[in-house]
Image: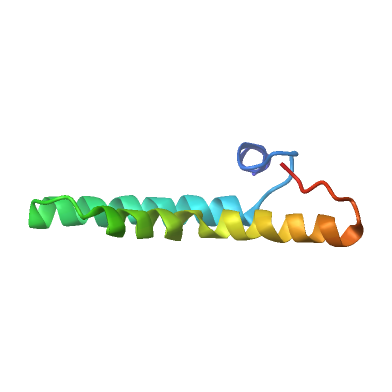
Length: 80
């Protein structure tokens, strides 16, 4: 379990948003693969952008929230 926490962390702490991003990314890959195999065509760019946004949303929201918290503390420097 510690190994997984280290893999998905920047500062040796577990991150639920990274795990959710992985799950959403795998779901998006599975969906695109299903569409390509069964319909024999690649989804359009807007659909692929939506799948990418769906996969990256948990991590982006977490980083945005951490940045707002840093600004509220008066730190002024949001996390990288």
